[in-house]
Length: 284
Ligand code: F3S
Image 1 (cartoon, rainbow, N blue to C red):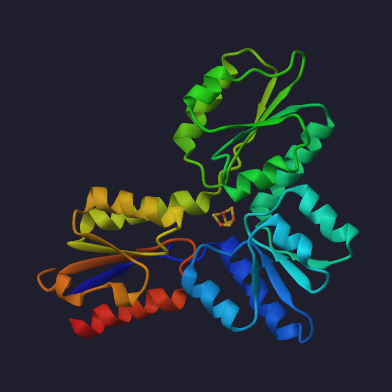
Image 2: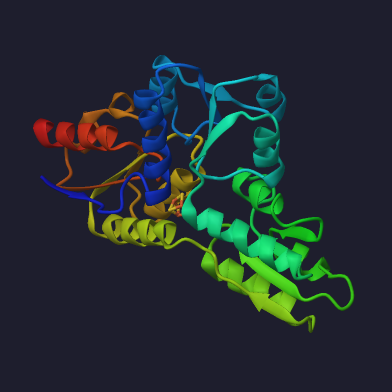
């Protein structure tokens, strides 16, 4: 049997950096509690491992406001500005593991709104990354998630409009929404802040899925980028399996296949990918 493992499977740069930050803090910080604000990534296995080593996950702002000391790690999605201001004001130490690509968007919206621009964030309004970006954009900001929002959008008169995107947003959809906004005749500046890691992973997955008899997509059930990856692969190969870990997979399903493709979402750790790959290899 031939196994094709996607080169882009697993942690992207920002997730890897955030996870490493947590383990580095665990190794260096011998005293005091270590918290993450929100789960550091969407992967139950990784979070369970971190919790077993003493990491405490703060899930809400209320929980954050109850702590008096310790170190808070900010996850790769980033947080609104008022969270950083709060931690500084209360002198609670924090380590910012926001992905640098997301941080760059914070900087853009902060600078543009200081110049008087009206900020438009194209993305999913309930996603923590978008909530974070909005929290750096001042009061003149709105989120647009579909064509209907774009049609309805109007900026205050005389304001320049600055458009940015959620890093994982689909490029074609972004272009479509930007076109709708552009037609309204505003003085507009568009910054494509979509991260190429997602696109590259999806393109490679689609390419492999087309060529194999069976495809395995590994990732947490709650990870939206893994769900999307599964949809893409399933479309190209109707023998596609979505698993969280090796335990979810029945090897018998591969009995009659000759080629297997493997990919994984951005929050799937390498050891899980390797375990699946090795077991497929051993069994056939
Ligand atoms: Fe950062 Fe791109 Fe990953 S924005 S967290 S490297 S998907």
